[in-house]
Length: 278
Image (cartoon, rainbow, N blue to C red; front, top):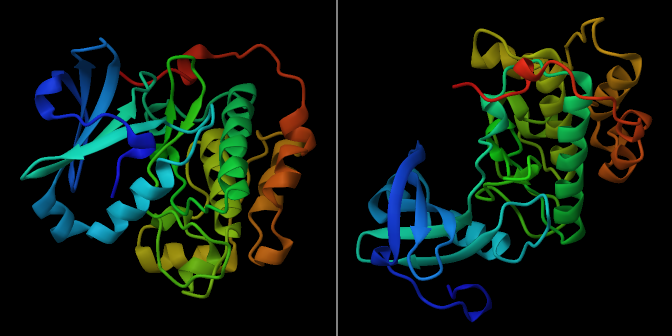
């Protein structure tokens, strides 16, 4: 795999390490400063042995090949990658606002609308490039220095428009066709968008149950209740996305034009409900 745009090669000593930003099964993400240019970035460090144990080189290769081609204001930038004998490093845009999972939820409806609208823009851009994200969730939506959405983590992405059968994604966000292991298309991203919008507006996922089996049953039956506190327009937006039949599910193009998304923004209230946790 070659670095994007023939970018100059890096090594670990080119960076000063700051705080730990996050960790996962295959590695950690650090705040770093590039010594030569002084840029503040995020460096994702993944041990090769952990990639083999918990993931696969093919998944990482797909993530790099897909992510490196994406340039959009609402997609987290992948600048470069490099490796040494033990690790693979991804040099990423630093998103100081953290992820949406860290928000106190529910957030105000104007705040939710802004976040969802920007997520729609990111997904629509990916789809225009023939890419399905397939793992949309609060943890994979970051907030940049400008306070706007950055779509991240393309490990499960697929760069084609054909129907696929790979089981991927996170339980609470699985579309019914994924939950039943049927062939699926990019419409799974529209379903996941509905789940994400529901979480922001209501404060919980729509289909969560005590056990995995019951959660899957709720997903396949599309059993959920929207609280009366959610406005009629937002309720209609959610129900249009959370359709069991992918053919009846609202497309991203229609989501961009939905009256709830296009509604003029009010001043964002209740800052305490939309700021990240300490």
